[in-house]
Length: 85
Image 1 (cartoon, rainbow, N blue to C red):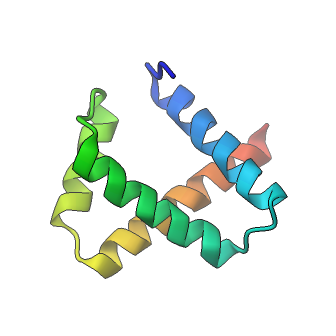
Image 2 (image 1 turned 120 degrees about the vertical axis):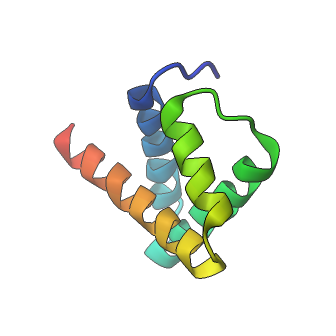
């Protein structure tokens, strides 16, 4: 997967969110999965886009609760993106 822009990144998250919803995941399960994904990405992926660098910095400096809040906001952003399509 070659993601070069913020919009491509949001589209990728949107695809994953749709798959989770179709699989019957609850909102809480989706949000918890988003946090786990954030933990993985922060530990294993070097951000290449400025937006991703900001997200990683926020993640690294946030408490566990703040990270969950950030994950929840990301899910909300993707849901908003889906409604615009």
